[in-house]
Every structure is written in C-alpha cells, then in structure tokens.
Amino acid sequence: MMFQNNFRWLIIASLFFSGTVSRAHEGHEYGPADPSVRVWTFADTGAHIHGAYVGSRDGKVQVRRTDGTVISLEIEKLTILDQKWIERKVAQVKEINENTTPIHSEVKLVVANVPSKPEIAETFEPFAKLNAVKYRQDENFFYVESNSMPDHRMMVGITAWQQQVPIPQPYFGDNAWRIPLEPVVAKNPLSAKSHFFRGAIALAANGVPIFNPIKNDGRTDTLLAGELDEFGGHCGRGDDYHYHIAPTHLQEIVGKDRPIAYALDGYPIYGYTEPDGSEVQGLDEFNGHSTPQLGYHYHATRKYPYLNGGFHGEVKEVDGQVDPQPRAGGVREAPAGTKSFAISLWHTAPDQEKSYWLIYNIPATANHLVKNDKTTGTVGLNDKKRASYDPMCSKGPGAKTYHISVYALSSEVELAKGSDNRAALLKAIKGITLAEKTLDFVYERTK
Figure 1 (cartoon, rainbow, N blue to C red):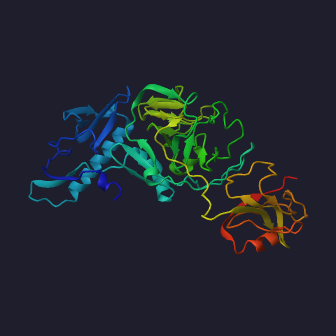
Figure 2: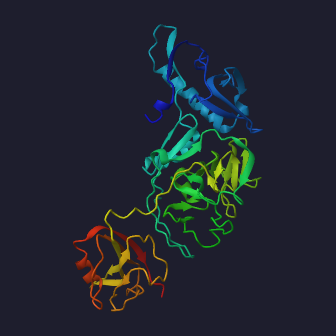
C-alpha cells in the first residue's frame, strides 16, 4: 500500500463504550515530524493548530499538540475539510470495531492513526487512475511524478512564433514535484508581478507544471501575446510542455468541487467559482481568499493573474524561480560517434512520396537551426529540383499529415550536386545511420 510505510500503525486494546465514541491511543508522545500530525484550521479566523487526532465525541475533537498537550476543539468551528476528515476517521474506526473479534466480552481491538490520504491526493487521484501521474508523501511533503505530457493535443492555436516541440520530461524519483503538506503563511508574501519569471509556480492535477503568466522577460503576458495553445500551454526552451494560465478544462475530470491545481506553496487552486458553484468574492492581489469551508485558497480568473498571482505561503526563490523544483530535460543528446545530422520534410501523397525540404551535413555540434539560416549544413533538392524549402501545398480539402525526420550519422554524406534529393540521401545513409526520429504533424491549407 502506497502510504503504509509512511504511517505508524498502532493496535491497542480498549474498553468498549456503549456511546458513540472514536478513541485513539492517548499515551504516545508524538514528535513534530510525526506523520500523524496534521493542520487544523479555524473557519472564522484561518488560524492553524498543528497536532495529531486523538478522538472525537459530543461535537468536539481531541488533538494532541506537538508539545504533548491534549486540547479539545469544537468541530463546528473548524473548516469543512477538517470536519469531513473527522467524519472519515470516525467511520474508519467504527468499521474496524464492528469487524474485529473481541479478545474478551468487554475488550475490542481499535486501530489508532489509521492512514488517511491527505486532501491534496484527491486532486491527483483521477489522473493516477489514468496512469498519468504517481504520488507519494513523507511527513512534510507531497510528491508528484509525471512526464508532463497531457492527454490533449498541444501547440494548436498559437498565433505567435513558437519553435519548440513537446517531449516527455523526467519528473520522477528525486526529480519529482514537491508540495508542502502543511502550508505556512508567508511573513513577506512575494508577487508574481516582480518575482518567479522562471520555472513553475504551481502543478496541475494532470502533472503538468504551471508557469508565471508573465514570461521570463518580466513584461510579456503570454496569453495576450498569442503564445499559448487552446489549453493555455506551450513548450519552453527545454521542450517542456507547461501551462501559463489555470487549466480549467481539468474540471471535466476532477470535478468543479475539487482543486484543478496546487500552488507550490501548498495552497489549492480552484476554478472560476466556489466548489458549490457560487460566485467568488473578495480575492486578494494573489487571486486568493479564505472561506469558512476551505480556509485559504486561490482561484482561476479570466483576467490577469489568471491563477495564483504570487504566494500567500512560504516559498524560497533562487535565481528567479521557486526552489527546489524539478529539472526539465531537453532534447536527447546525439548517439556517441555522431559526426553529422540530416533533416528531411516529407509527405506521402496518394500517388507518390513528396519532399519539401532537405538539409544534410549539419555539424554534430549543432543543437538548433535558426530561422532562414542558410549557412549551417547543405541544402538538398526538393521535388521541384530547387535547393530550398518548398511550402507544403497538398491538393484537396482536409488536413494532411506531414513528417520531419532527423538522422544522426556516423560521417558526413557525399552527394553529387544536382542529384542530392531525398531518394539519394536515404540511399547514401543506409550504412551510417546511428539513430533516427520522425515527428508527425497535421497541416491544413486555409485557402
């Protein structure tokens, strides 16, 4: 079981009470790092108390604070989330009592500190069931693993120039996303208007990171600039797909009553409305507020800042980004022994294979091609027998699928000028191809 190693199971003998009682072990000293310690929040003030659940009865819950003292809190004065947590705990203990054979007629087994998933897990669980994310936790943090590839089309709808291509990211193991289980209100809250122009500020329920809506130049609103696709995302320079606005489309899976993301300070991000569908009111400069039901949380908005416009909670900023956070992995390095690259843009028509662009003898040291660059590599002939790019112009209505193939070669290619077309290239590289990869994309003529 995922959480079994992170919790202490205590099975104790307890007297059976005739009244409705949920009772846990009262004699154990809990340290401040004990995984059973959680945050209890008062609905009216938002004040927090840290402590472990001991028991609940007559409208009160007993909590053992980290200093060892036990206090009673009125359940109705806590947030709805805390109240629901208590209800689940009582139900768990009751079920165990009812299904445990008594040792003697007056003694039954009771399990204390029955592991419960934290509230944050309910946001990521739908995507865990789809194998899109994995999660785990320790006493302080909730960790999410993903490859940052959402289950929707990407890069469609961008109107500004965007050169990157989405590739899976290694957000696993020690490189997973980390979110505090117990957010701490910041003494000096930081605004995203002047901070965090690099890296993520939140993590969506599907494991895709969310960046500051303002790009790393510190002034450009990516949405208004037309740099985002139809889902509010695009690729960065590391070919890492991420959102820049709240991914409200995820409510179709997680539901409108659940967060669609969590900010990296540990506070949840909800959609355009409250979970009950009511209008959101009284947002602060960070797009957040406190309610009796939820405590402090952020909301999505259709205008800037679109999601959390900074951090109500404590985070650490290093080099313009929240630290620590996972490292993105760019395009894979070329295989050992690579001496040159070749690129071919082609399409299979009903009657023939067409070639629109061909370039070979690209130096092995190159990792990108600048737009309109005519000095890197040798440009071969297209189907019109021109050493240039030929715009795609397949006949007939509807979308057509095209291909860009990249070849890593163990040597440069020797092709005769005037006959260096795609067919000649493919023949010449048969024995020197170390690796190849093809990107398929769909294009439709508008005229």
